[in-house]
View 1 (cartoon, rainbow, N blue to C red):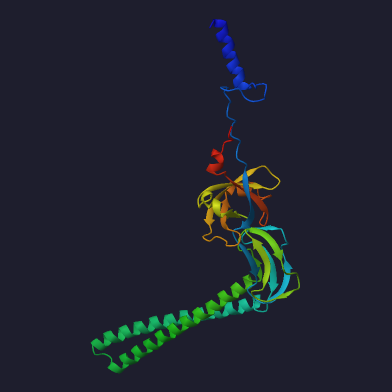
View 2: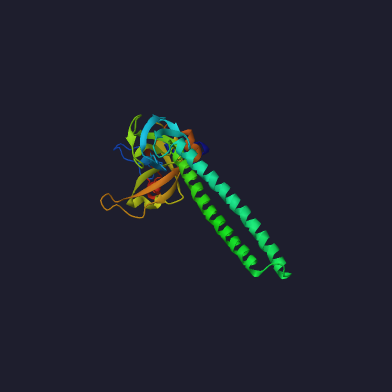
Length: 306
């Protein structure tokens, strides 16, 4: 075979590898080299998830009364300690606090006077004991002084007990007075408002519902056959409907039971703080998202047969 024939043969092999020739019958000639088709990427598998808050609470008043002012409305963000509504209660008035404070101050003065009497009687007993040792006073005088010292001590102890009780009343009145303005227990969003100005409500009656806006987590259902792909500590990708952006969440809980009817297991994943804050407008409690499940190893190994 000449050099020209070799060149032509190599060129034919290259052309055959790119586009196989067919015989007259339309088949592939024997001995022709056919390249295996590249494996197609496995389709992305997603699961519907639901955004849930870490906490939600119905805030209520601690005392009965009439609502005098509602400071928030549905959808308003609040911070911990922000006032939510005011209530006018007969159990919490400034006059009652002033009276309780005055009683406590009088009790404190009584304790101070009783303490002074105790000191005076203790000094008197000490002097009489020294005089008794020299034989200058009789025993009855010393015994009377000792008895008076005991009475003074009992009076002081009783005064301190009374003072403690009156101070507790002052603290209670202060707490009730503070309870007239109900405040947010944590930062979040007002999701519901059940009250309006002028309404009479009782202690413990739900008034305003607040959901914690950060951090948020997503709950999703894993098919029983895919539970090995999602484990506590693993990272998942979450796509908000209507957006191609992917957020990252870490699985914090995989429920221990399989639902007998649907054959799925629930799991919870916590969003990263930066994703949580950056997507605050789209990550809203109650919204559905798509949780991306990585393709299985079997699907990654799947290759079309020639």
